[in-house]
Length: 352
Image 1 (cartoon, rainbow, N blue to C red):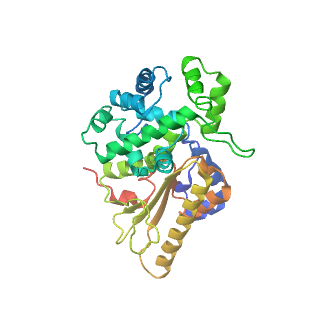
Image 2 (cartoon, rainbow, N blue to C red):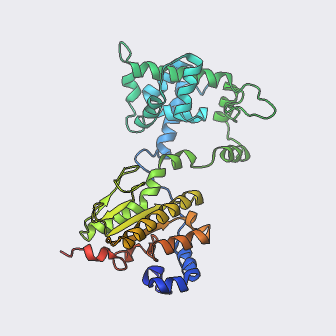
Image 3 (cartoon, rainbow, N blue to C red):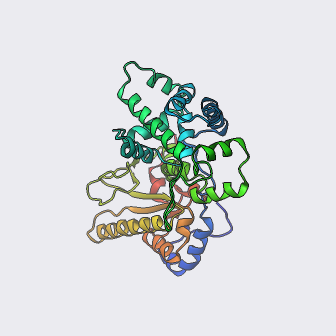
């Protein structure tokens, strides 16, 4: 934490009110944009693995000159990760691929099956060697064959003519004219402008970013839990969408328990201002509950906000609301090391 200026959690409530706009600016300066760095998660595919699977698919289809259910089955049996490469060629999500098999082939492949296969092949690269060689074929193997069959059909025929105001999902450089397009792209270097245009349509890292969105949001909560555990603070971390009696929405942390909380912590990292406003609304509700407890003579908990990301830096009025609701107890990833020192949490720390 920089020592160049005071932070709101170091001020009394009266001081905070007098210096509110200054504290908004100070907190804004501490916010960090998290969008440039993503966690890999458990299912990330390294490029060398993706490239190996691509080459397996290319060999099995004779340079994409023979794309059929049989040649695709050969590829995924040799390296199951080719299943993900094939989906990437289609440009579809697993649920969309399943829906395509359902509508075109009448298959009963469920979206959850497609998702499960898409994840499993990243860790079990011999998965299809087992599924497709079962005799008689199991239910999952039959569904997997349906996905391969509809993929072969769509890749071979390419994109149909589109309307004036619509564009077909297969109207891409590698699938527009069926196998002709695919062979051309596979055998020649794709022009950079084409690559950039398709990246514009698809957004770089979009699929991976969606798959690790919960991990991105968990950065702050995990950091808080680590600090509390390291100082032997008794706490309860709630689960997503958990119901806690007395709370319309469960806060992220209770210290020591939800039955008689001394400190309640709300945590969020977001680059989306809409999500940030939702957190502001929750903090206001918790502040109102705290104040009502105080008026009724019950012990009032301390409300703490641990926030970060550019979503919280969009509206100064929202930051004013957060600071006032928490009486200045607002911490970012940059100031999180001061969490215990400047809150009632220090009363629950146990030094071995």
